[in-house]
Amino acid sequence: MKTCKKIGFTTSMPVEVLFAAGHIPVDINNILMSGDPVRHIRQAELKGFPRTVCTWIKGNYATALSANLDEVVGVIQGDCSNTHSLLMMLSDEGMPVTFFSFPPQREDDELNREITKLEERYEVSRNETEKVKQRLDGIRRKLRILDDLTWKERLVTGRENHWWLINSSDFMGDPDGFEERLDAFLDQVRNRDPLPHKLRIGYLGVPPIYLNLYDTITDLGGDVLFNEVQRQFAMPALESDIVQQYLTFTYPYSVFDRLHDIQTEILKRGIDAVIGYTQSFCHLQIDNILLKKYIDLPFLTLEGDQPEIIDQRTLLRLESFFEVHTST
Ligand code: SF4
Image 1 (cartoon, rainbow, N blue to C red):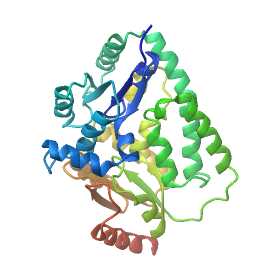
Image 2 (cartoon, rainbow, N blue to C red):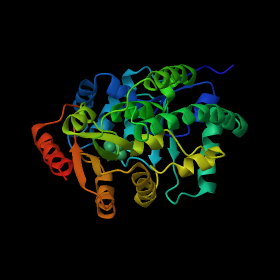
Image 3 (cartoon, rainbow, N blue to C red):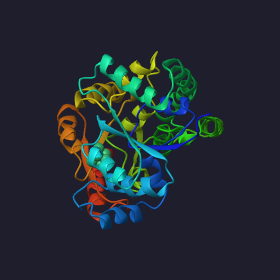
Image 4 (tube, rainbow, N blue to C red):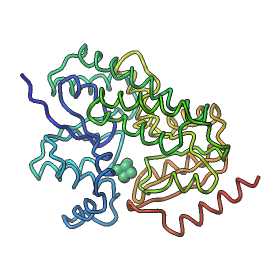
């Protein structure tokens, strides 16, 4: 009989394989933000991580070592240029690590090979993986409903949308429990009155490290009706098999794949303006240049660094942006 392990991962990857093997997948980013991120980042800096490395990486390092994880799966291609070195640091601390790569050319044969390698590593068959996918698709269908209730019915706030979609990367380690909470939430919001009309905002980029961005946007007269990357984590396409599912997932591939998805959703949701969030010292800041170039809407780029409430300078930029675009 296999032992159930707590397996951390650095960004969305085929969690179906880990669930099929009877393990508990844990998105390290999510537990970082629900714990004490400042302390973890400080611990990584004391260990020698430079100031000029993204805080998510530093937080992932210290969180992975303090969260009683048995192993870590790191996505070394298709996410962060720093993950390989992060895994070496974790390995040096005695943490068993496994690599996973999304193929840069978005090829199904290559992705199939990567998923097969993962299945071999965790001793599960493709059939077992697909069965878990079907189970999780049932929850993902409900997350699609939640997303529709956000932009069509205006019953769910941008912050709530963010929270549910982001936590679907690992279903909080317990798909049944997650689904139960989701069902209760959907029942509750259906009894709400629709939210008042505000500027319809699209949020692009990795999840914000700011602690109060969604509340600030609401206070300034906007509401986020599209959370780009968080929605991708929820795998809304519900493709027919595991390989197609992770090929349709835009985040690990080129910025143009993301752009296609963004343009479609912006149009469908009637988005009025866009916030392109970037993280200090992140390569995705370069992709944001192209997003800004090709998205023909008012576009505000924000750069966050530490897990903190929004600083005065950023707040001033947000205030000016909303002042201009809520009065037109
Ligand atoms: S925000 Fe960018 S630099 Fe930071 S972990 Fe994510 S991909 Fe890497």
